[in-house]
Length: 505
Image 1 (spheres, one colour):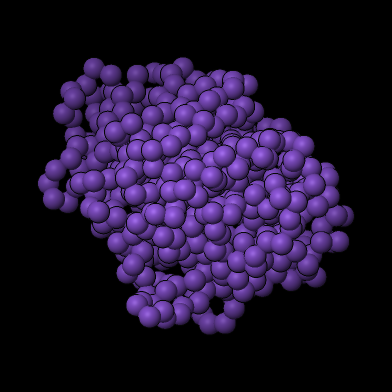
Image 2 (cartoon, helix red, strand yellow; image 1 turned 135 degrees about the vertical axis):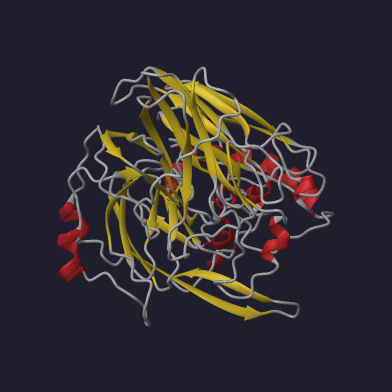
C-alpha cells in the first residue's frame, strides 16, 4: 500500500477534532471499514478513571474491531487541555488513523482568541508494513518524507500548500500544539513572537514564556501567542530537529507553516527566516510547575528502589529476514490479539504469558515508583496510559561512548529527584544511555500500557503493562463485555489474510 490509499478517518487526515467541555460525557462510535485490518482507537492521555475497558488497546483491554464491525467508546472528560486519538493496532496509525482532541476548561492565563488545535506529524510515502519490513538494525529507521501541519504542507516534489494561521492584531491567541508523529520530535518557534506555555499534555501549569518549544512524540502544549508584530508581514512557524539525529530525521529539511495577520494577502510569504533555536538534544523540559500542587512521598521511594525497568535492544534472524526487538528487563512485548489481558481476568486467570510483560501493582492508593534505564543511545518518549505520571528526575543524555551509559545510583542520585510538586504529564523522555524516574498513585484499577511512543519501537516490543489492582478491575468495568467483541474478532481472525507479525501494538 502506498499513501495513495492511506487509512483515514471520515476521509481525512487528521481525523475529526473531538471537541468537548470539561466534565462532558463523550461517546464515539468507531466503524471499521478497512478490508483486511482490524483496528482499535486509543484516547491518548485520557484518564479513563475506573473505565479501563474503553482505553482502546487491542491485546490488552479489548480484541481488535474486525472489518465490518463497530465499537462505541464512552468516557468522561475528567481532564482539560489538548490531546489526540490513534489506532493501537500494530503501527497502523502511521498510515493515517489519528485525530485531535480539545477539552475546554479553565486557563492559567487569560487570552482573547482560541485558534483550536494545531497538529504536527511526520508523513511517509510508504506504508507502515513496508517500512517495518526494512528494519535490520536498531538504527535502520528511514527519514520521514514530510512534516505536516494540521495535515498539510508543501512537498519536495513541488506540490502541496503551506498551512496558514491567521492572527488578529493586538489580541492574545491560544493554540494547542500536538505532536502526532510516528518517529519525529521537533523544536518549534514563531519568528519574532514568543510563546507562553499554559498547559503540558492534560496538566495546567504556571505560565512560562519561551522562544521555542521541544515536543517529543505524543506530547502537547497549550500556548498563548501575543499578536504584537507588524500586521503587514507574514511569519514562519519553524520546525527544527535535534542535531544528534537520534530522535527522528526527515527528508523535509526546513518544514514550516505560515502565520499572518487578519487583513493581509492570502498569498503573503514571510521574508525573515528566523534565528536558530536552542538545540534540544532530544530532551524535553521537566521543570514545569503544575497549577494544582501535589507532592510525592519521598519516604516511600526508598522502599521501592527495586522497581527498575532496563531497556535493551536485540536482533535475530528468522527464515526470511532479520528482525529488531526492543526489550524491557530482557523481554519484548508480544501480545495476542485473540487473548487480551482483560480476558484473563474475565476467566479468573492470572496465568499471563511472559511476553505480555505484566507487572502487577496490587495495592490501593500506594505510590508506585519506576526507575527506567536505557542501555542504548536512542532516547524514548515514554507514555503511560490511565495516569499522569510524576516526573521525578532524569539523567542528562549520555548518547556517546561505550558501555551501558549512566545507571541510576540510589546513593548519589536520589538527592537529585524532585518530590515537591514535580512536573506531571503522560509523555516524557527517557534519555539515551541514561535513566528516568517516574511515579504514579495506584488509584485507577486496570491494565495500563507503559510504552515508547516511537511507533517502530513499540511495534518491536518496547512496552510493559502495569496490572493495577487486578482484584478491583471487575468492580469498575463490565469485564464480561469483552467477550462479545472477542467472539466477533475470533470469527474474523480464523480467515484473516494477514496475521500478527509484530508486538501487535
